[in-house]
Length: 200
Ligand SMILES: Nc1ncnc2c1ncn2[C@@H]1O[C@H](COP(=O)(O)OP(=O)(O)O)[C@@H](O)[C@H]1O
Ligand SMILES: [Mg+2]
Image 1 (cartoon, rainbow, N blue to C red):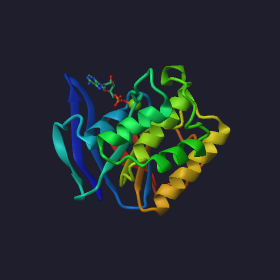
Image 2: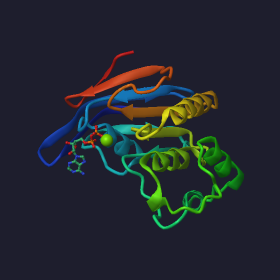
Image 3: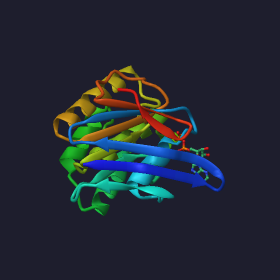
Image 4: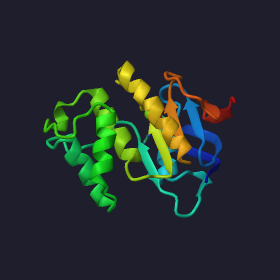
C-alpha cells in the first residue's frame, strides 16, 4: 500500500535523510522513533508530497487517501473545534457530521462547545489534529508525535482508536521520540543519522 524506496533528503548542506526505506500494508501499525531533529517529520512530509526527496521515490497504491497530523496542526483560531473539523472535511467533500461529533465525544471534546480553538490546551488541539487525520476514512494515517499533551484517559482512548483503525484495514504510522503508549506494533523502526533501521 505504501513503499518508500531509498529516500534521501538534504536541506542546503545538511544531510537529513540518507537512506530511508519502508513498506506498509493495510492493517499494519508501524512506529518510527528518533530523537528531535532526526528527520521524522521530514519523512511524513515526503510521504504526503509536501516536499520532494532528492533521491529515491515513494509509491502509494492507487485510490489510497492519506490523513496526517504533522508537527503543530493549523486551525482557524477564532472558530470552534467542530467548525474547524467541518471546514476541513468540507474542503474534501467528505463532511459527515455524525461521524465527526462521535469522534469528538469519544475523545472527551464536546462538539457543542463553542469555545474558540485559540483557547484550547495542547492536548485538545492534538485531539482535533488526530480527528482530522482520520475523519474522512483515510487509508494511510500518519501521526507525528500524536500523544503530546494527552492525559491518561485520552491516551487510553487513543490506543483504542488506533486499534480500531488497524482492524478497519488502515495503515497507521506513528512517529515519536519514544514509545510513550501501550500499542502493539507490527513493525518498529529507528531513525538515526539519516538511516531508518528496522528493529522489529
Ligand atoms: N524546510 C527545512 N529547511 C531547512 N532545514 C529543515 C527543514 N525542515 C527540517 N529541517 C531540518 O531537518 C532536520 C530534521 O527535521 P525534522 O524532520 O523536523 O525532525 P524531527 O521531526 O525528527 O524532529 C532538523 O535539523 C531540521 O532543522
Ligand atoms: Mg518532528
